[in-house]
Length: 239
Image (cartoon, rainbow, N blue to C red; front, side, top):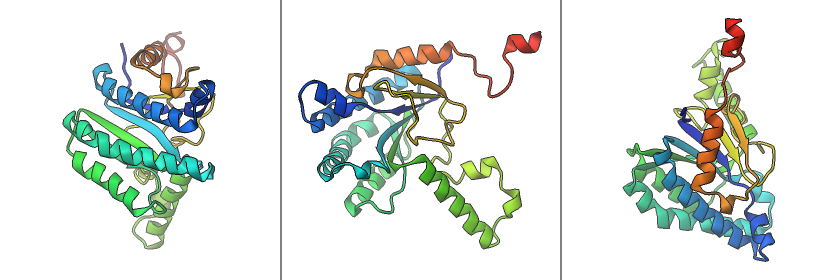
């Protein structure tokens, strides 16, 4: 079975999961963290080398301050509680997103996670935090524009590969598969450049209910598809 090396997940539905159970939204986010733990543990055994998760978008700051504070607390707890296990299991942590406006303690934790696990190879866990696809593209464009203004590069020589190298995901292959839970059918500003040719799988379950079986089912769905990248299917070429 063809297995994608890189799977990206939009972890959606924590709040609705909690609401359906008459619980506060924080309970849904806590359950979502546990689903993330299970997914990270399952990924290497399913042949996944890179796993990107949409943890906190640049638009999430518009949520109530209490919920944002809860999410920041959960991030700190996840790193402090799980970093040792991730490192022991050979998981490398990469962070993508804009860190400029983050609190110093958050930035420090993110840096610690990346530094400690930099040499690990069993799985690369990419956490999209304070991330937005459009913002990432704008920041990459500004970086290249500044380099051109300094005379370091010729603007006419900029290629798609050069642009990709200026994104937060430099050195990480594009995801072959993007999964979204909760039944919503959109990318929500997630990996807009990188997901140009990704296969998309939308699942009706809320993220806290996501299991190894859901992930395995999505991988089987992926394996059943023919990826053409804008070309013709094999039978069409033959005919």
